[in-house]
Image 1 (cartoon, one colour):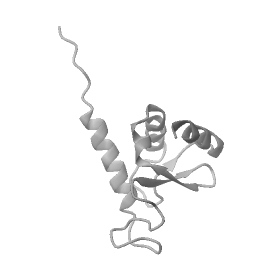
Image 2 (tube, one colour):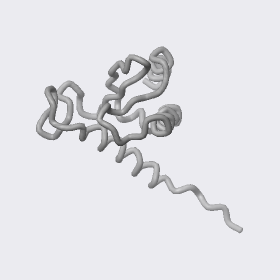
Image 3 (tube, rainbow, N blue to C red):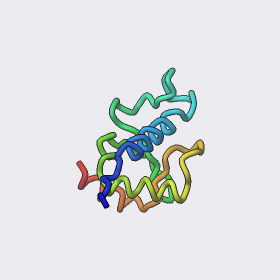
Length: 104
C-alpha cells in the first residue's frame, strides 16, 4: 500500500478564496474601483484582530507560514469567511503582534 503525498492545491485554492473575499468587500469610501482599500500596498491584505477589531495590514507571504494558517483556520471556525466585516482573526492583539513580528 503506497502512502499518498497530500495535495497542496486545495490549500492554495482556499488561500486564494480568502484573499478574494477580503478584497471584495464592496466599493466604499477608501476603496478603489476594484474594491481594494487604497491604503493597502500591493502584496498585502487587511485583517482585523482582537476584541476591538484593530486593523492590521499584513504581507501575503504570511499565508505560507503554518502559524498564520492556524490563525486562519481558527477564524474560519469562529466567524467563517462570508461576512461584511473583513477577515477577523480570533486572538488577542498582543499575541498577533508577537506572531507577526516573528514571521517578518
